[in-house]
Amino acid sequence: MKADTLIVNATLVGPDGLSEGAAVAIDGRHIAAVGTTGTLDCDASETVDARGALLFPGLIDSHAHYREPGLEHKGNIATESRAAIAGGVTSFIDMPNTKPATVDAETLNDKYMRAERSSSANYGFFLAASDRTPAIIPTIDRSLLPGIKLFLGTTTGAMAAPAERALEDLFRLCADMNLPIMVHAEDDSLIAAAAAEAIARYGSREAVPVSEHHIIRSREACLRATARAVELAMRFGTRLHIAHVSTADEVREFLSSGPVSGKQITAETTPLYLDPVLCEPSARTHRHKINPAVKLPGDAEALREALADGRIDTIGTDHAPHLESEKLGGALTAASGAPSVQFALDVMLEYLRPELIARAMAANPAAIFAIGGRGRIETGMAADLTLVEHTSGHIISDADVITPAQWTPFAGREIHHRVARVWVNGREAFDSTHLASPGAAERLLFGLA
Image 1 (cartoon, one colour):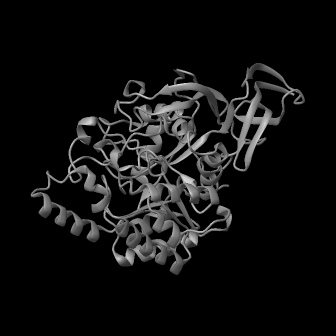
Image 2: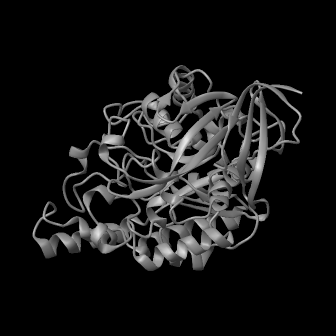
Image 3: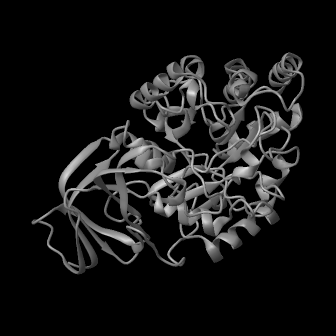
């Protein structure tokens, strides 16, 4: 067999475990064969000796904010997709709360055209839920739609939730189309009441410290909104994906273990909620202010357990760049969100097993959003691959950041892995420190898996 590239002596990372001494042949855009080193008969133009390094399927980040259009001073599809590639993420799905918001075929197609010109990673885009969405969905090519993003709660740039009748129509239509709804679930009335109480205690909106953020955006606010979304999904038979789960309570009340193929309700968390360091009270700085708020160490432990036993199905980075100047302030004034995609994989490998990451950031996102031809290292799949080496140690600093944000919530963390090489659709996109020019990326196709 002839191939363009043969990777040998790799430790293959799958959703169920590791396979040492693996060999993977790439021919054109696809994986031509998977076998063992020394037995895979292949005449390749290039041979890459992985020397035991971890070979992941290219990671799929199903929750990202790349800020284009309208917020390009923070980042754009070109800059943030380069950060993704440097972090081992070969595909992303971008959220709709841009300016203008992604609410119809025109704004959705505009994003796809922008990404075709500039993205280094494979790309897809959510459509935002609005009162008009039930009438708009049938006019859009199903392969362009990973799902609908519903904001049950105010966050950065979020749209208001549809009125009750339109919300019910949306859940009914998405059930009929087998189209998942991803929900940002926080209850605005509880948040508003807690914010008013904090302002009364501290004397002004500006005086409320960032350490109050998790009290204002409370676990009760998450529970109430999530309960509403789950009730609607169960009433209409809609597939629901709960975004950025931050509490042990949501895991206990709403989530069940098992393969995603058998679930109506699935869930995501993010690296910032899982992290055993960032959940400590001492880490509650403006840099780590995100929505929903990071809760307590016990919540992070429960989320890691839920990821291990399959109650939480995906990890999305919720990569959301702001300039550092926009992050300054307190609980009610500092911008919420953090640029995390470049270092998320390296940091998570400090406390998560590789196979859990492959399951939650490759196989499961591909299954939940029906992404054709990606998410596993198998013959015939797209050759999206991420090679990760073990290192003696490196301290992350803001100087490492390659996007306009120029800071990272992981600054100061010591890591012992690094993304060494990345292939996108069979073409090398990253080699240690060098990022290739865009050109290999493709739009993701949904509803096909």
